[in-house]
Image (cartoon, rainbow, N blue to C red; front, side, top):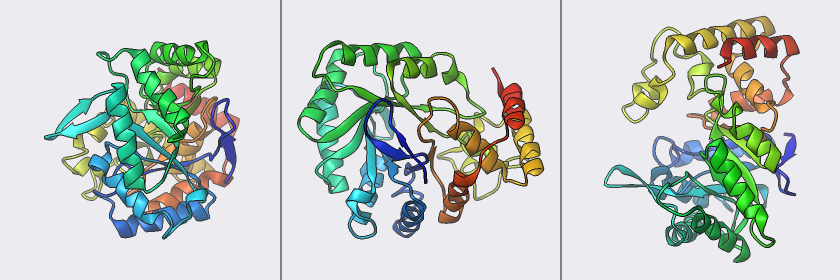
Length: 315
């Protein structure tokens, strides 16, 4: 698999990332093992997780596979801090103390002495930005993280954070920003992507398949084994089960038929090759689904198809 630099850094990562949000919950140890093996065998390196995924279950499962299934040096491990669930409620906390304690807990669960990329999971209004970013500085200076980034920041938040870090020598430069980006959600093109390009951040899109909708699986209803059929993801996926999304999905399906590709291949190749994008994060339910996604490595969309998809999905 082709490798790309993460922003203006020397870190090279595979141009597809393996998402592990459901690992330790909907994805068990055996399925996770199969996915990780398939990913590494295809040349993938970047594995994305977060302390808040299953209250650490994802990190623990990855940690159990490192050394046993794959070598530590074969992976670029990325994790996040700042979102947790207490008593079932979503809690955000980007204070320096909480972030650093969360990082230490992540390292213990992963069984490693450092992560390759540590990201603030979300912007938090009630914590001074300089305090949040000082945690990134400390993580790098202490050797607990090799590179740092942000996630789910708006355009002005991205610009402010990156500029603050660049203002004084010795601060940890932001390497990346992780944001939702797909043919069904192109809002980041207005401000986030220009800010990232101007300030040297690589873009890591999450939900590049429109929360699974762009695969076409919901064109005639909701499959019983799909995420939309589960109480945990019903509203998450349901946000894209509307008339506008249906028009985009139909355009993707027509393009797939003409190219003799799958809708997944069309949608994933489109976002992978957008300006500024380093590695879309693909979270699969099964190893078979993941292998289907990995097959896009040899594919490139024709310019006429890109133009048509841009037109129908534009905001």
